[in-house]
Length: 82
Image (cartoon, rainbow, N blue to C red; front, side, top):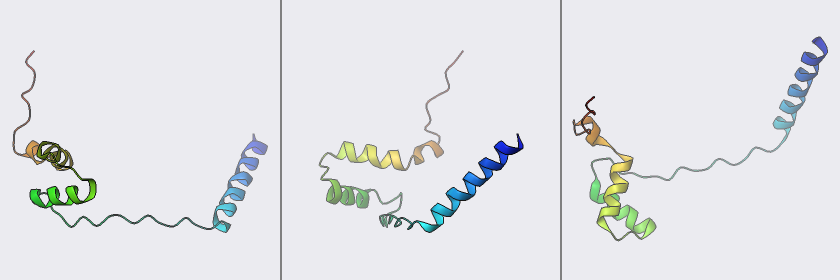
């Protein structure tokens, strides 16, 4: 059991040293969406410019999927009755 633990420890140390010596990957940049959840028409224009969406219903679904604020307002579906 001791040999197994020791060999596992050596493998982990060796892998750690390999990771340190390898070049690190470049970090991905997060897109800057300077829009708030209350700026619905800003979201529409931004989504149109990026994706070419033309249908307002599709844009509204996308907006409300990202910001489900209706759940905090008490518009949840009623609980099923037993």
